[in-house]
Length: 303
Image 1 (cartoon, rainbow, N blue to C red):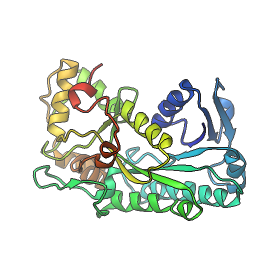
Image 2 (image 1 turned 90 degrees about the horizontal axis):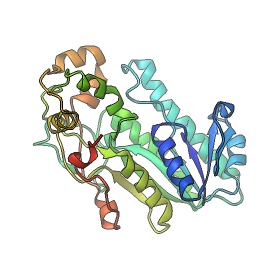
Image 3 (image 1 turned 90 degrees about the vertical axis):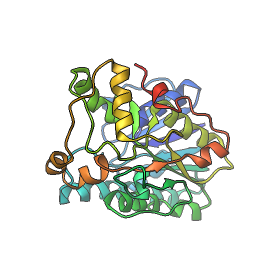
Image 4 (image 1 turned 30 degrees about the vertical axis):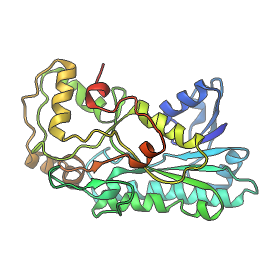
């Protein structure tokens, strides 16, 4: 299989590239600075500015599948009005360029895997009152939900062009080399970790191994399309996550981080991303026979 990965040099994209190339697939990664990466077997970096449709169309020639992971990191900094614009526009620019490039091709890739997030469903501050968000649930409200909905819609045109499109609503991804763990593990290793806010907020998550395996599963199963929740089947709260991490690192979890302090530091980002979350079930993946390697926090937090 020949797969083009937009965002292939990022946290998830790098792991996905390694997995696909290790099994013999060819991966092409469009990049603004391809010369900064070392080419390797089955992996190629091609120059692309992130917007030019003609240049992307040339890269897509002969591809069997496309994975669109491009988008500004939602947790990169405080959600100022300018940062919110960057978060949304980075996703819409990539989606618009991809659709325009696909329209230029006479023979298109069969499959598009379109990134999204579990934030699509909205946010809840207490897991006890949060609904179980399956793929049948509609979109919620808030900045994350509206951004995810626009992100998904940005490539809807691919379906009209006859392509199979899978939308991956991904929960926070756990792995020491990136994402939330890379930021908080140093604090916990110093023995300074602890409850975040009330600790009652739902915390959906997925291990990086399962994220990569699920994307690969969707690439391989040509009969599947539509939205898929990429989240572990175990429901957790922020409190259970924090204590599981502390246990895995053999460190205490005693120093609380007050919600008011987080709101003061991060504003809306704290309200939606840290002090609230979603209870998510991967119903469609399980229905189609996907097996999680790390279905529980105890199995995911092994270092």
